[in-house]
Length: 430
Image (cartoon, rainbow, N blue to C red; front, side):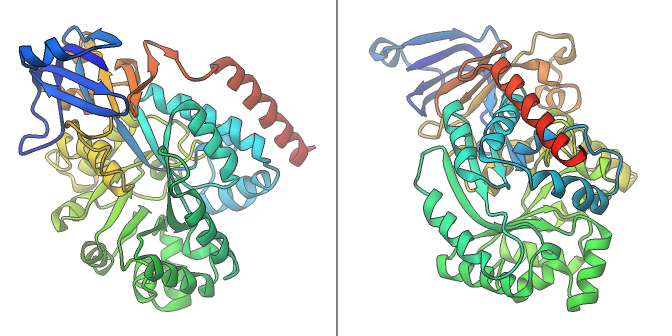
């Protein structure tokens, strides 16, 4: 077991999820064994392989990145300052066509390093070359939920179903959820088949949804329905799922999300950089729609930083509503931790409670930006940064601590990623 003592603890559970208490957290293999104050009997019986003196710092659930394309690190700062459609079709797709499995392996590892520095222990990842991606994550001890990324014609539904059966149960750190890229990249026959798969497996489906006004307008012109209405008519959301971005949603779209239990995954950094708009978070909250937070990919953000996303989520919502009380810090912190876990189906990784997965982080409170302790949770959202992350643990294993990566050779990853990014760019640009 690992013992964290002399800690402040925010469990994110119960009736007061943001309350900070003093005590200890014990982990046993991949599970949380104790949260709070141990009895003398428990202390006498316990055998610890390691004891960590938290010195008054905060232990809390880790962040969950509920939408990303990790291996797109090779496009970071390569195709910037363009509108979404030009960026995607003229810059991203041509280079992605040159990717190999080994490329994805290195680029995903690079992203995972960045996640760990930001206190993120799980990603809801939509990409391809999945065997190599899974290898990158499992070697590092990083948790990932794979989201189906199919597009094109109906034949690709077979690949989606095959991956669903292949990757679920493959490794404790890996799960797979039905999904597709977006309405505008899928033939209607493929969407119909995906609706049938949702019914066959009684499974949630996740996809990009209503990211831009153009996407919604063209869908209405084509089908007479918004993307959400189209998915509803095809049974795609019958068992829930997640919509990534959800910037341009009608009231009826939101009613469908509420009815079906679909999570809205907010990506404020990417939506700002691509000028896609500001999602109506207040309306979603008022309707009781589940909210999660994601970075989107490193080609459209370009950082994989949950602290920046949290600040933007609150700040942009306040600006949109012209109301400084909108989207309070507690709701943002919840979306970045518990909301993300539940949107990804990681219900065992959401809060700090005995028996749950030991996915947690330690936040350094003894830095200027965290003082004084007027409200620790709000400090994390409004003034916190990656520099405050001391330790990141996933499934009971410390992956990052005090600036060091414990399950990967960072410089070997940097060199490998740089070499492969250069090769891909040269193959396209000459």
